[in-house]
Image (cartoon, rainbow, N blue to C red; front, top):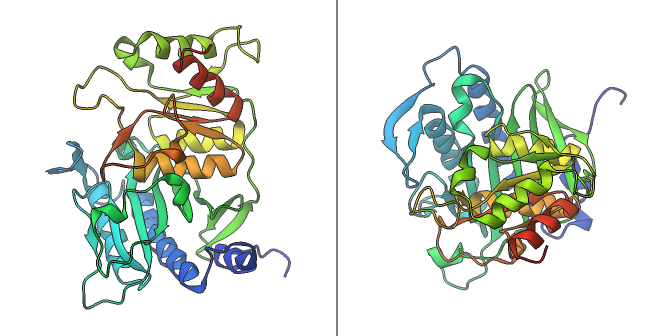
Length: 337
């Protein structure tokens, strides 16, 4: 019917035959996740009108101040997903341990890992923020779930993506068969297909990095930055600096327009020698998305999707975006260029 787009649920069902992960259980899981994101989007959109801005006074497992909207988003996702009947356990950036599905609730065979509100430090200034998610299947034969069930490589994900809460609310996700973007139409309350088969340009034009940390970088990392700021790169002109400070927003822009996002290791905090970003709930899901769109993601040495997690909240450096840009950054970090 003219004027009505394809909803995300329709899209999953249409592509179910080509996507082994998209079973009926998976479709229901995604539907519950989308419903939770709609609730979060509603609260984000009225954050300036109600008392959900600011800090709760608590500190999360990462040692960061918890914001009220962070806490709200985390509670919504846990509540909705525990009742989906499709999960056996979850992990959130905000929780130190795994989150089990109560015994009195139905359980499924999927594991969900998420960052409930990436970029939440920008809430008070109305910058785009988002929810990042990663979905695995439980592979062990144990009747119960342990942390070991979460310590997997990114290449084992069956789906990953993010919700972006901004001037418009979007869902971008992959099940290993391309990347598709959906925009929420508030008039009907549905995510409609707006960006089919997203492909990131092989060579970008933006670099996104927190240059205030330059003082704490090693020489190879500084050389990577110099490469993108010089005329001695493949573009023969400096890349444009674009850094929002909300990774999901920086990543989304580069995914559509081309570019590289970098969060290298630094010496500023001895407790984070491997970088700031979390492997399981941030780096791996976005790496899955970008590779399916034709891009690349490494920790400066290795492909992100090949790294097997050794801890629930393990951190890694991250170089992610256009394929040629990431390959060059990685070559420099390895000392090969």
